[in-house]
Image 1 (cartoon, protein in one colour):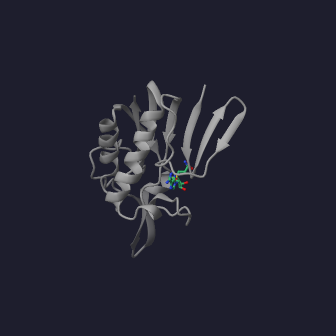
Image 2: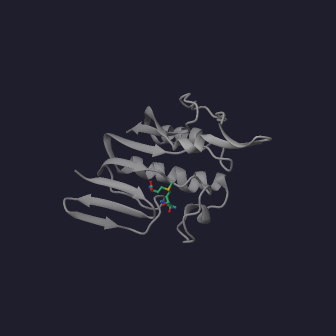
Image 3: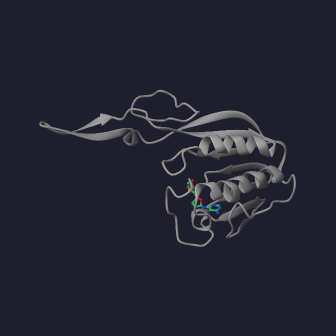
Length: 172
Ligand SMILES: C[S@@+](CC[C@H](N)C(=O)[O-])C[C@H]1O[C@@H](n2cnc3c(N)ncnc32)[C@H](O)[C@@H]1O
């Protein structure tokens, strides 16, 4: 089995007991046609978190969400499509952010335009703490459960106090 993972700035290729790391963005790594059994990526959420100041960091290379979508997200999905064998899967963990409000919707649209079928959505449950906010009153500060404020197309499971992110599953 051959597994390819776009991870951090590296591409890991596991063949038997060998592992290869490349310092390269997933938007520039062109895999061999129909050579991969599975692709999973939790890509950067545009500029939501800063991971480093290397020039390969996608949000340093592409500084608006529109350019980032075309040059990073779309290319990464197209590269995954090219590399996957027919019938195999791409899993993409993404989430809308204040800086990029349609990241989820654009991801699904780009994957379908690249030739994938959207077969499933898995919900990743984040830490329970993330669903709480502090509220001040005369009695002091208390923690209250935060209301779900999600506005996009992919509606979260309704579990009070918990936040969810989708992992979209696509089949070639
Ligand atoms: C949401 S984190 C996920 C990290 C890791 N997969 C994990 O789950 O812990 C996004 C990662 O994408 C990396 N990254 C930044 N620019 C990239 C690029 N052009 N291509 C591939 N990965 C990139 C960041 O350095 C960061 O490690």
